[in-house]
Picture 1 (cartoon, rainbow, N blue to C red):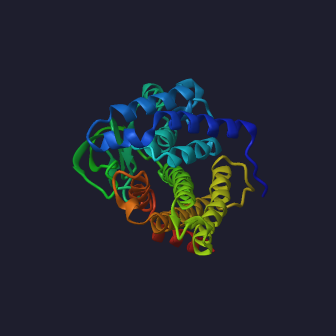
Picture 2: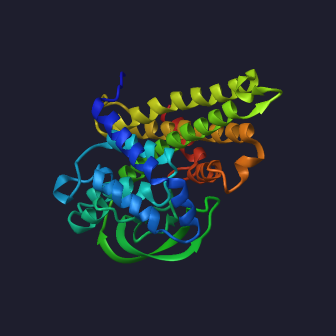
Picture 3: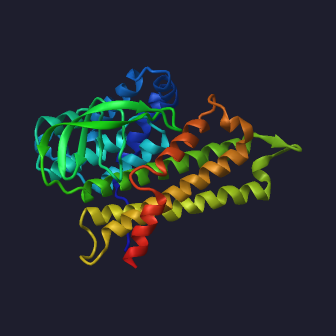
Amino acid sequence: MEFLLSDVHDDLASSVDALLTKADVPTRARAWIDGDRGPVTEVFAALADTGVNGLLIDESSGGSSAGATEMVVAMEQIGRHALPGPVVESIAVLPVLFRTADITGERLGALAEGTFGTCAIPPVSPLAPVADVAYLVRDGALSVATIGDAQATVDPTRTLAELLPGDVLADGVAIDDAVDIGTLATAAQLIGMGGAMLTLAADYAQARKQFGRAIGSFQAVKHHLADVAIAIEMARPLVHAAALGIDGLVPEDTDVRRDVAAAKVAAGDAAHLAARRALQVLGAIGYTTEHDLSLYLTKTRALLTSWGTPASLRQRVLESL
C-alpha cells in the first residue's frame, strides 16, 4: 500500500501546529495543573474555530464530514504540543459513538464548537477524563452521565473519574467503532509526543557541552536518538494505514481492528523509547516540573494504557494471526 499525505493534510498539520505553537501550550498546561482550566479551554475553542473538533462530525451537525486520516494528522500535532484535556474523547470517540447510536443535533454541535466532552466505555476505558459533559456506555446502553469522585493520575494534567449513569439516550449501541477510533487517536497523539521529545533531546544535545564538545557529537548519543527517530518513522505508517482502514480505503479482507491495535502498540513503544532516551540525554533536569520534558514524560506514561493496554492490543494482533 502506498500512502502519501496530500497538500490538504500538510496544510491541516501546519495550521494546527502554528496555532498551538503561538498558544504556548506548556504554560497553559501548567495553569491547568494549578486548577485554572480557562487558558486550555481557550485553545480548544480556537481549534474548534479551525474545524479540528468537527472533523468526524457530519456537516449537518456543524462538522466537516472528514475522516480518520484527517483526524490522525490533527491529533499528531495535538500530541506534539501535549495539549491537556479529554481531546481524544471530544474529537474522536464521542462523534463516532453518537453516529453509531444515530444521535445528531445539539450534542454533536456542542462538540464541534469546542465543548470538552468525555466518556467511559467499560471494560476498555472504565474511567473517563473529567470534562464539561460526560457519557457512559454500559451493557449497550448509552446514557448521559455524572462525574463521580476524581482520581489523580501520573499525568498531573489528566484527572480521571468513574461515571454514574443518568438518562438513557440509546440502547443496543455497538462500541467497537468508538473504541477503535479512540485507540487510533491515542496512537496519533503518542507519535506526536514522541517526535516532540526527540526534538527536545536533540536540541539539548546540540547545546550541552562536555569536554569542549556538544554531547550530540558523541556517537553513543547519536545512536540513542537515531533509534528513537527510526521507531517513530516505522510507527507512523501503521497509524496512517489504520486510518485508511477505518475510512474504508483498504481491501475488503483487511482486518482493520488488528491494524488499529498494531498501530497503538507501535506508537506506544516509540513514545516510550523517546521518553526514556530523552531523559537519558537531559539527565535530572528532565524530571523537574520546570522543564517541558516533564509534561511529555507523564503524559506518555498515562496514554500508554489509555483506550487499550499494550497487553490487550498485542493479544488482539496475536488472535488475528
